[in-house]
Structure formats: structure tokens, C-alpha cells
Length: 375
Image (cartoon, rainbow, N blue to C red; front, side, top):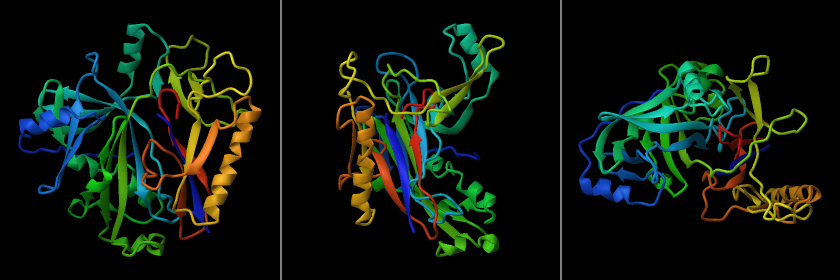
């Protein structure tokens, strides 16, 4: 898994309902189960509902698969004082699905408190000492040999990106999701072998938007704010990645947690560097080393010229820094995003151009494995 996004500009509270529908026809369940994608989806245009297929066991074992769940804004608000830019990423969550009788739960695991111990009793003691979070509950509408199908429509109508909370915090008043004016965006919801993307168009309504002075600067109607929210389920990275300890002198960002079984007197607070996985083809190479997989970034085609070309050229200079660090030329690559690619697709590290109504700043953000910090 590797997805990092930088944004350039031009001069939780979380609740989900339970989706219930008539039993899904067996042939639909079988067809979804046979698809070679992470989590298969089906859009029912007549009912306006989204079916989500979930395998309950790994292909080679019995453990419930885990995923990285991330939310983002394909369509933003465009006002620097409010945040919520186009392309803004939410927090990465480690999640799994858990079946209990006729119900399927989507559970977020607690990665803030853990242990590096391999002792099962010590691991269990930590797990039982801190809460997890059930993000949603679904009634199972169909199943086939360890594979279930649920109607997940209402879950994707939930305000996972905390938009209403942000509007309240920026003193724009009280807004809530109006489901009658919200919908799944089927053409932007897709499933791939490594990730499944579901996009919803959410309308936030306010009965008294008199406080929405800043929002009025960008919204055509302050009684209703419509944005798009995407949820990405990502396959966990392959094993073998070795995390590195964080140092404030490094210039890196960090992923932090508390190791609850550290020896008495040692600091329980642990910090890991958030970074790309860069491996040498030849482990013994000392200079001009070729990478197993170069770091590749893509510049948003929506950036206006001549700035678009300047972004490609300027960001490409990073390759010189990697060469100075002993890597071969081409270890860090920058190209224009392919014309048929979606800049919100988690398979692309994107440098995204964002328009705002007022001046602001550029920033970088990333979907990182919450366990290790790996992009």
C-alpha cells in the first residue's frame, strides 16, 4: 500500500444506521463471491441501494481479514478558513468485519494501545483493557460459504469525515445529513483487487443557517451544503516491512502509540517514522542502488499551465536528493496523472491542485498503515 497526497492551492463523531433489505438472490451472492476484488459491490438503481460483499475468512485460513479504512473528500468546500479541501484525507483506521448471528459488525480496532510482546496472554490483556469502536451494524441479506452480502447504503450516508462537526467548530451553525438529498455515486464507486472505493454525495441541511457567514462566501445556498465523501477499504500491505524509530531531528512525520508491556521505568510512548517502503534490489549495494519499487508521484492534470509543468519539474528535483543518498537515478519519479486515472484512487501518490476562494497554504498528507506508519 502506498498513497500520499500533497495539496496546492490557487491564489469523531460518527454514526451509521443498519441497512436491511430482502434476501439477496443466491445467484447474485455467488457472482459477487467469485469476483477477484477486495470487497465486491453492486448498485441497485431501482432501490437506490448499494450491496457490499464481505469475506469472513482469509483465503488460506480462518481469521477475519483486516483492512485499512480511510475517508476523503473528492469534492470539497473551497474555503481556507473552513478547511475541507478537495482531496482532503481523513484518518486511517484498522478495521475488520465481525459476524454475530444474523448481524455483521464493522469494527475499528484500537491501535493507540498495544504491545510488542508475542505472549498471547499479554496481548489479550492489552486488548481487553481498552475499547474498540463498532462503526456500523448490518443485517446479513445473503451468504455463500463464508461470504456474506449486506445492504450498506445507510452506512455510507454517515458523516465519517466529521463535516457537521467541522462546521460547528468553525461557528457556521448546526448541520445534519439529509438522507433524502443524499445518494451513492455509482460511477465513482469501484472495486479493485487491492482496494474498494465507495463515494457518496451528502447534503448537509440547516434549519437556521444565519451563523454561516464564512460558508456563504462559497456555497450557493447556505441552507444546504452538498459535498462528496469517499470511503476507501485498502488491503493490508504485504509483510516484511521493518518500521523505523522516529527522531524529531529526522524531518519525518510520525505514527505514535503506547506499548503497555514495556519494562517498568521505560517510556510507554512509542513513535515510528511515517514513510514509503524503499528496498534495494541488491541488499549489499552501497551506492547507485536500484529500488525494488521506485517512489512514483503523479501531478494533477487540473493544475493550470504553466504551473502544472513547473510542479512536475520542481518535484522531480527530489530524485537528486535520493541520488545523493546513494540511490540510482529514477528512484523518485514524477509524471502527470494518466488521463484515465482518478486522483482519489489510492493506487496513485498524487500532487493535487486545489482551488480556494481565499489564500491559504500547501500541505502534505498520506494514508499510512496505522500499525507501522508505512505509506
